[in-house]
Length: 586
Image (tube, rainbow, N blue to C red):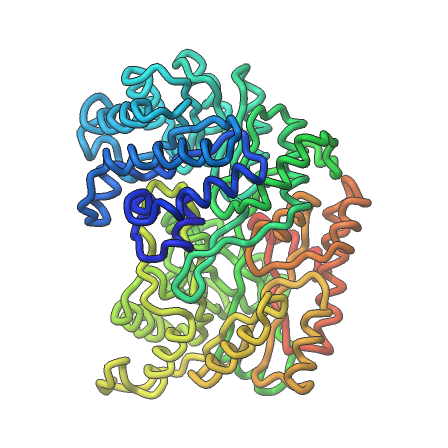
């Protein structure tokens, strides 16, 4: 409901406001889901609590918002003429329970108040969803159970490693809630169907309670001032539903990005019923979202200028302050002849060591040049200028300017990022520094000499828009581009033809050796901007346990073919394992 209403009622800061200011839009959304075949609809009340409204400085009566949310859902049921169940949606408070009075006082009372209003307005059950803290979920369950007599479903969101953001494993969920009196436990939100299914697989090992699964359609992305989601194909969502049913889920649905046609696909798959098309066996944890990379000056700029082939490997900075593993990886890569690495900047909007700082330390440690990714997502323009000047003084000469990943849902209620500028604005800012002035026109002591890389996606849904953005980036000062990861070169060839057979700036091709069919399915259906062709998925499926070898073969094919189409390549190591990349280069 939230992601849908944010698009349909763009004037609201929180989608729950629509209950009062645009009730017809909420009613229409409910009706579409009911007509698509939903048996359960959820009230538009997920964030309708005093904490979240207060963080957004919204002065509205949250009790009235909750009451209206339940009333609209009941009206939708009446209009539709179907006996669907109405679940009163309650999400986490968006801040630490301890900060607002502890689990036994202020925080718990907010859950109780919301549940009491929803019960009083006629919902059939309560769903506590998208919790990242097991302690907070247990406090919420206790408060809701004390305040109302309705059945309660309890759901957590899991990250790429299968655990919640606070470190709880799905196995802990069933055991902890077994005696709490909940009607069902499950996984919702998360990073998409693949990670949710992985969490469900672990959950079923330790619970006898009915299980639920309601994943996001995929990862969010930021475009033209809006947060959007990939429009997963009906076939993929039906496959998710078939596998969820086989794993034992009693309730199967969708979360952020889910549209009525996705619910219709789930409905059809459940009614069939049919077994899953793919036999994935023991599910793996969902991988981190891949990122593009970038290079410049010294080795990179010189090689590109001279027409020499460039190979880089993408690495992630540590999640803490210990660089030992990263430096060991770089040393092993250097021993195999890799002397350029590109360094991610907080992939998936999760805090890691600064890419600029990590890059400077890498260059100090080894004879390796870096291309730090830099996103304007988390800083003001002045802050970015400060970071760039410091990086230049530390010897960094290459920057990849990217807009940056949008924070995934279920991140503890962190507010939307500032997003004061996109990658084009960042390139313009770096261009100012390269001209010896800051963004306000004030003269610097000397100009910088950054080589500026930008992202290019040959598989973009809107290629004219992608090409327009590329031209604007070049006009702003971009000197090279790096593609989204590719698994066949057809899109790159077609894009080159549209450009008249010549790239306006050197291009490096992204290469990623797939390790499994599950990974290929997730990238194709859940990760915005990535396309894994059906032919490649078929090869992975046919290979069975040998899928990783097929992934290496495909990566080698792309790498070899790119030599006649591009100026270089950057390789993404699956799951942060550089040995996989070395297999491709062997």
